[in-house]
Length: 372
Ligand code: SF4
Picture 1: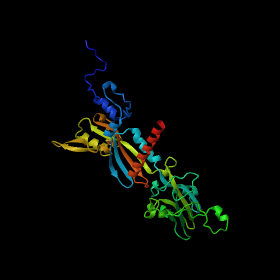
Picture 2: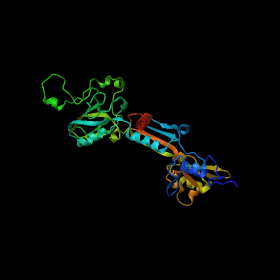
Picture 3: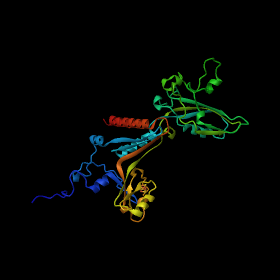
């Protein structure tokens, strides 16, 4: 008599998962109370008993992975990243927020501030102004480095509200770039010698930054001219110098190159059975994101259709109450990420993503070096 194995299941096709397991593996099911099957099945032998190989190899990744840009402006970008693990998608998000460098104001030398805004609050506001300069053109500056044209950008701000004039609003366009570096003379120089040599300032530039080809036709300035810094009443004045250096968002959020970088999984909305007439109209009204439409069918009857599933925000209004869960199924595709990057302005969003990829590549190479 032939031996029958416990795993001998003739109704299960070999080499592929039965539909209910395939659904669990690839989709998050969003029920009215909570989502289920949220975990990623990563173990390569998870479905070995059914003859299905769940391992991830480079070839499998290369044949499944694709990127498609769906929206691109100067400030933001939305793209679909398909065939990738959540850990990698999240690594890109975290690198974008915390590890892609930018230039931001770090030191503020205040010569005079008679406005109502305190020095430290003003310095903090200055730090958060996005600067229109490519950080790749500058070096990092450590504590012991002298500020030079290679690692520092200097701005001056000098605004005064004359007595008898109306109040004025100081905006970011008042920050003027000093390509030759600081103009404030070091305190030690002031007390010192009567030498005719040029007095030392707070920077040690060897040449003017505007002679560099990168900046000669592209002067450095704040990205947006209308960011409010302070308000001055009659007789009040602010005079300061602001020094910007290169840094990353992990040190302080002012260096983060993105207003936000986030993703969501591709929504999948399907009707499990026909929804017609008044119920179809009710379903259309339930959805705030206008995912459903009404279609006329024969003899004046109407039925609901899923017209814009990508717009679904997963508010679950359409499956609340009565027995709506029998009609509508809400799912998310586990390996399809709709990624959004909003740049603060230093680099275009597509440039930021390229930089994030390079940083992740460097990290992988460092890890391989350590392991080898
Ligand atoms: S979950 Fe909300 S947004 Fe999505 S289809 Fe249902 S009602 Fe519309």
